Length: 511
Image 1 (cartoon, rainbow, N blue to C red):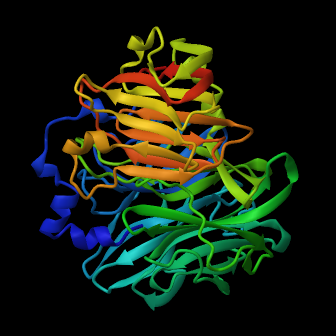
Image 2: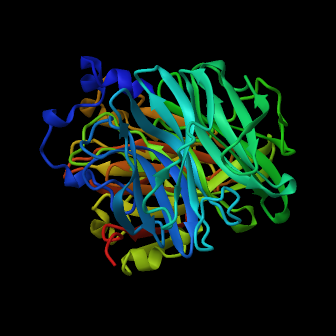
Image 3: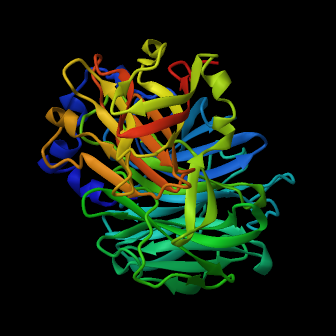
């Protein structure tokens, strides 16, 4: 969780980057997403404490309960059966204010302690234990705290023996905890922020922790490391084979950034399979950050990230979560790589979520033209889901013009066959943003047997693009006007739109 927000909030710089609540009280409902999570009328940043129990996905999230700017960090709480329709619950863990100190509830995780290793459970029920960073601004210190719940995470009791780990450091945060069966202990990854290291601890009871090892520096070290998450990920098509993936969030050169490492974990040490200098990117956009997984059965990992706000203010909420993503590892020409696809629990229900408003096309020849399919007028809500595959043939570029208006404003989602990149080009919307904004984003992506496939998830103010089953991913924020809502398909050179399906999700939040 970015501590930088705390210092910015007290300065004019904060209001220039993240416009303050008082500056804009006009509701911006045109940019509230319909199928991505947002708080009702407050601020959110990192997802916290994701767990699944008895048919409900629990989402805790960094939350300012009083305003739509960063501050008063607490854990908000919501639950869902399908990752689309959310029930908002009261704040689960609130900022602690005492006479001599304030303890902000920074990022962390939550686990269902099935065997009651913590002894917090009562009446034979398994407690939920939250593990989080307590940030003490007056003491200029961060330490790891726990709290427990005996009503399935609705309310928590702060553990009297806190902090459970305190190494007297100012930047030591974001614990992520899971059960490791081979050694029958809880494992925690937590960030030594400025050292670009992830420290690994072990515990039998969630209360006493032993230092096991450190990982890093490695990969990208240009900025602070935060929000680590270590998880087993299945190799595609080989459900019995796994590798371990370590996610680390860092503030990149121009934007929020996440990297990952692939290797092995033996209950004590994480060993990186790649050279220490190798940098692997989770997302090539400018807003995907602090992602952690729901850890499900059979090593299924469903990743959820924070889409950092910026560019234009929203009201009364601020901040949203990404589409949950299924993770897998696949062999590529470059070696083993992480693939991310929109969560199957959502994708398998697109027909229902679109209330039957969908269309598909096959084998459309494209030749240096802009093609607008019939019936596209009904997909002008800027809340839809597109899946398409192209036969590249002799085309040098191809893709989609989204959020078009009559004056030439548009966002282009395309593929450059010569450069072998998937890209999102927002340069024709330049007049909305500062000249310093990152308006062209790209992910390296090779075609497969002369084809490219793409999934486009546009939801009012967020745009997530997945290329070749999630080998390349780009996520950014968009703020279309009421007139910027048209869609067309283009090619430079000959190509074939092999298949395209679009679902209107403007009413996805309705039952």
